[in-house]
Image (cartoon, rainbow, N blue to C red; front, side, top):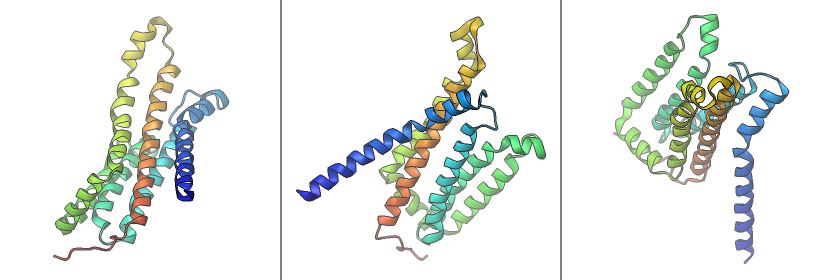
Length: 212
């Protein structure tokens, strides 16, 4: 009975933690618009939080790759994917201080390195990618990526909001709609990445490396 109570309490705590987590985009957007009085530009609290969530997500997979030879190559692929996303988020920095569109150069270097490294041991890479995809957390990760790359882009299309508001079009409304859903996507990606890390830390098969 005591164990059942503990489980219920833990699940309730988990539930309320999720409520707080998914409210993060709203509070950050409110801080930008109502406190900082901006229209969510490239240098804003919203953008900085998105970058932080990406960094934490990268760290989750990078740690697994650093800690376990068994998971290393698959973890490098996943962390490299999110690193490329992080570099893309810094495009305004590259545009300002180097050259417009320069972000593609470091992103390509990271991608080529990660793919090349993964191909040095295809058997373990495929084995761990299969395990990664079969995880219960994979669907959640895909949901976050889908919200980020598809829903936020479609929902934030300028043409859509021009049609909705007509002559009363206000850009900040469009920005709020796009950036809030984008931040929600990053939040879900971060949450699923933390769950992947927790599952890894609980696993008893972290070192089952297969030699060629």
